Length: 370
Image (cartoon, rainbow, N blue to C red; front, top):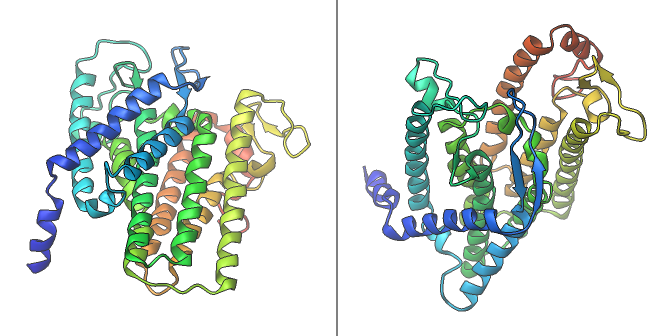
């Protein structure tokens, strides 16, 4: 009862949290539309059309951090404000994602478009349609919402981490564990935006409709659960040995090499099917499925890289508690579930070609294990 009495007031959004979130989204909308960036054509949709994505996330992120740094230096805002209002902002973003889902559903039901992006796909099951969405690429004032929300989630994750870091410095308990966690996350997020165009060839962008699953996942789940390790380190002191720190760095580097290398190979193959992979002509099954490089080692080897990276974010917290390992454990469950969905879809889509690919590449995620 006492815990509920403590948590409930903290979960009620204040006007300041509304302003913070609204300003953040307004900035992203303006920066995404105005700032220069490479315009990348998306995958061909069933009706032959292609969306175009302005990949200026890295410029938008750097400008945002610079503006926030300037604001903190001028005492216009406190760098610890997100760390101080974490539960409030969590509640606010959850409310926002729920409202957006309802608006998307209503707009989709009223859509008369026959385009692949906007044609509504109603299953007759309200819960299913709210969860998975009914339109592939809904837009608002010319902004592709699916791409927008992914960007918001990744930037939000960094802003939470930076605020937690500022709080750690303010409290005088900055540790090697916090530094490693922050460093790994910054490198991962910056890498995401440097290679933002690769996102345009992912399954979420190409095939998933926009519903509560993606909206909540992007604006709530990514920033608030991926930052659990930072919140935990604020309240727990971990003394890492030099050996443990070096081993942690190796896990991060190997994970990054596999994750980025696999995604890059897939993206390049889709754009240029004859491009060399590891200095050799690519092995292609049925003229469609890449079976070279990382994709000749495991059918979902990018998931392996992602899991190693997630583990590297948690290892700085030591082994005294399972709490910091929520993210890699959740990710393992999610990716196995997603891999099963992917396998079923590919088996149905490619049939004999997929069976041949599975014969050539028998491992799903973990070579010689799964």
